[in-house]
Length: 304
Image (cartoon, rainbow, N blue to C red):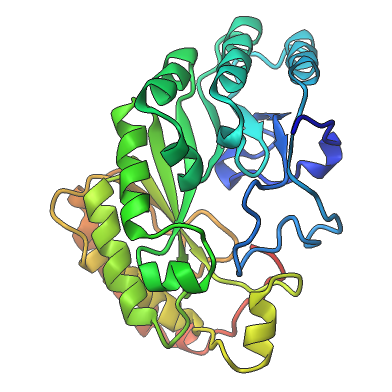
């Protein structure tokens, strides 16, 4: 399981953890699941096919020492890899503690995670990670529709997503969820919208972020699209999905909301959707009804 993972192949991180602002420390390589139909991240999208592996802890600590020595103090630390929470809890807790020991004034330690990782850990294990200093995880909800999740081979369903999200929050770890607009295509758009709003309402995550589906040539979904078995949404239809998800949220939702990705067709954000929902909806309606947006071509990015 433990392997040396070339640093140059650990290439993904959330925009908020941009390399100029955060210290990126490779913990795992690849993704422990790597079966999602829409994803081509480790299947050649970046010119590299990368298998899953966990780095030897001595190598990770050497990286932490390096960043401490070049005075990367006071910056957030992102533990890189598709889902470092797939690693053994004691291993990950030791790394987080070492980050906190060696790199001073770290405002945030974060990483990607999968719902499967969280469900496999006990409440005590998650609390151990929180106590070690893990502040927030970024996790792909993608859709609240179990039907869409099954079609996209996400490896989990809506109820498992709810359970994993609540489990993280109860352990004291903040949760940032990703939603992929258009993931249900035109056929399952309504189910994607209503069920995503339901799952978000159940979890009330710290943050949720919108991404817009783009299909890369190395993903399995590419073949479905080319064969006409999957129909992409237009920019306006994606914005309508976002508006309808926001409109269908429960009154309990206090999440921060962001459109902080190049794939999106708007950049609206709020520190509290409960307080700013009306503004959010009005702004989305403005975009949806704007003539320029109605005629906007799809971005057609080759990777998410």
